Image (tube, rainbow, N blue to C red; front, side, top):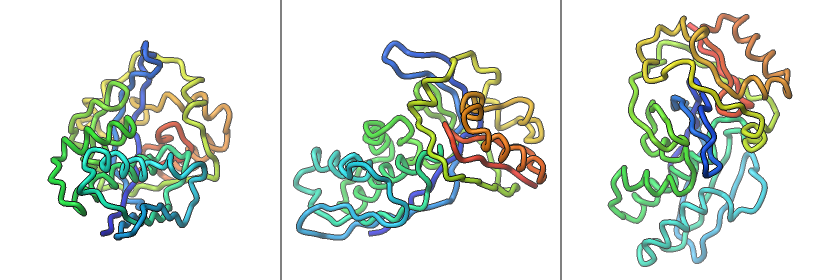
Length: 251
């Protein structure tokens, strides 16, 4: 069985306060983008992850695809039998595109179908939250306003199909941990729940990504890419997540 995990961009991203548990409260809009990887499972004597394309590095047991498999295997030991897992990665790591989170969430949905577990979308989202704060987004995979540490989500009506989305992914890996260490929480300057009614030409003056200040200071090429997108006619351009990918929306 085969599926195609896609990535996301952030439309606005505000870090509003540091929490007592060490996490941060934020406000953002997640928007799905159809840059996709491929993920397949087939029967096997033992469960093994095989990766091609971009190599994520590190211990394969830390890969969210395997963590998703182990999570469902723990709760459904009779149904979840061994499989070979084939993951072909094309979404750059450390780019703020959520590729790893997408892989984990899509794996949950894939296994739910493969083993006929009968889990609802909300149940899958609850499992996804155990993998990471932004993983539930990829269960729903439609524009969502996210608050809390990113796990509190609600639908928001935003349609960018009338624009060309240009995505620039330089060969830079921005550490999420480092990006958060430099952030200075502040009240959100714009209520993103109103983004769906804000004309897109006004986005440039109204919404922003709080991480751009510190990340651009360390990687000036990212600021240059953003300006290049504006120079080429972008109505709005921004860094997604903690970087390093920059996107532009053009007519």
